[in-house]
Length: 450
Image 1: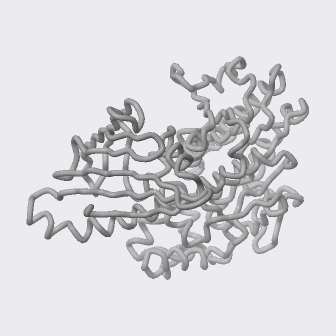
Image 2: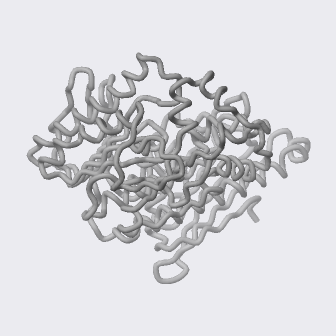
Image 3: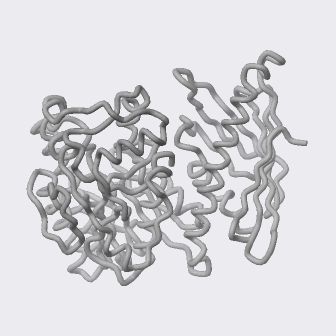
C-alpha cells in the first residue's frame, strides 16, 4: 500500500488527461499558490530521464528538490523519484485509466519516508498528510477545471497565441493553461535577447519583431507597471507610459501585418468607470474621472489602429484579480493573518473582483467567442461592499476582520493611490460575459484560496 493515495475523476479520456500532464505548463498549473516553488532548470519532460530542478520555500528557508522521471508508459503511467530533497524517500506514481466513455480517473500514489527516522515521523507525519491532502484537492480542482474549459474545442486546430506580461501572475498562469491545452504560446519579452518561443520588443524605441507576429491566432496584451505603490509624479508617468505606449506599439504593428491575428485582447481596468459608489455600471456606461479613469481611456483608445484595420479587438476591463499567488490579495493577507484586517474607510465602497482561474478562463472564452468585440468587464457577478469582502476573507482565514483602517490613514500612507484604489469603488456588472455564455467557477471564498 502507498503511504498516500488520491483519486481525481476527470471528464476526459485517460489519453487526454495524460497528454495534459505531458505538456509544458502542467507543473505551473498544478503547483498550489501557498507553495513557494521556483523552477531552476528542466531537462526533458515526464519521459524516462526527464529532470526537474526546483527551489522550495518553507518559512524563511529554501532547499533544493530534484525530481527524475522513470517508468514512462504513454497514456497510462509515469513516476517521479526524488533525487535531492527534504524527504528520506519520495516516489510519486501517476496512473491514468478510463472509467467510461469520455471519463477517466487519475490516481496519484506516493511512497515517502520522512527524515530523522522515528522522530521525524512523530513530528511531521500528521502535518505531511494534511498538506498532501490539501495539495491534491487543489490539483484535482485545477485539472478538472482546465480540461473542462478545453473540452468543447478539442477537435479544433491548436491556437498560436502571443502574450505580453507573461511573467506576471495572470500572464504566467494563462500561458500554462494554454500550453497544457495543446496550444502554442509565444512570450513577448523586452530588455533581453529572446530565447526560443519569445518575441522581442522595446517600448522605449518603438521596436517589435513584426515577422514573428505574422499568422498568430491571438495576441493577449497584459503588461503594465505596478499600481500598488505610492504614486509619485514619476511613477504616474510610468503607469501611463507602460500601458498606453506599449498598446500603441502593438496595435500599430497589428494594423500593418500581412496576416494579422484573428483577435487582439488588450488589458484595461474597471478603474475606467471612476468612483461610482454603489451605482451599477456595465460596458455601456460612460467613463468616470480621476487618474485611473484617464489612463484607462487612453489605454483603450490606443487599441484603435488594430480595430480600424478590421482585427477583432477586445478591451479587458479587469476587476481586482484574487489569488493567493499575489496581487492585491497577497498585500491584504499579512494584516488579516495577524487579526489586524477589517473595513477600509467606510467599508461601503464596492469591490468588483474575479478569481484568477476565472480570469484565465474568461480570456480563453473571449479568444474563442468570435461575436465579442469592444469593452468586456472581466469581473465576477458578485461585487460587494469592502466591509463584506473583508468579513469573508476573515472567515476563510479563521480570523476576525474588525480592525478598521480609517480613510485619513489610507490617504496619509498611500496618497492618491489609496484614494483611487482603496477608498473608491465600482459596482461593475459583467454584462458581455454573461450574455456570451461564460460560466464562472469560483465563488469568493474559493477565489481567496486559489
